[in-house]
Length: 185
Image (cartoon, rainbow, N blue to C red; front, side):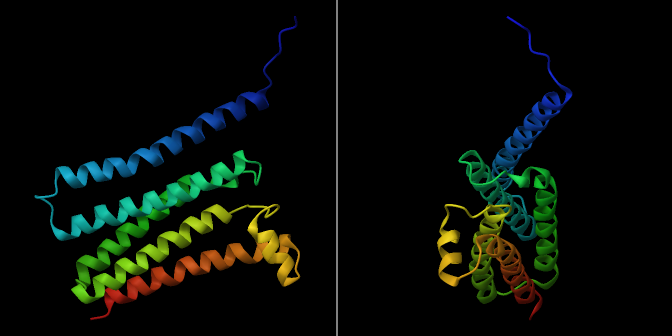
């Protein structure tokens, strides 16, 4: 039997897979850490910290669900999981968004009537972000989008170029609306 030599490319790919799995593990465990911190210090935190912990945890869970759907789709052969290069950027963006929303919450103190609309819009935002991350890099073969593109009469490759910006635009509209609701008095 011949020994197979490890090529530098296979070593690099193995290291990439280990790093991606480590990042995914951190992504999955970080909301649990936020939940644990929230429940441990629930009685001693002010409303601003409470809002930050809830929003950050929801943001991280949303991104994690989207990335996991993307990863599952890549395992099933639907796409090639391009999100692995951008996971860290997306999580930094989610935490940055949480900081911005917390600043707006602390500065403008929205009323109780506005908070119900903010929570409803945050669910819409979460769903849109999950969809955006799931669609990211999808080739749309053997998916519902292929049937949709046929019914419209366009090529599914063109539809993929259309769906991704629409999903990103759809995610930004609820975010801007939530920020506007917080600022408006």
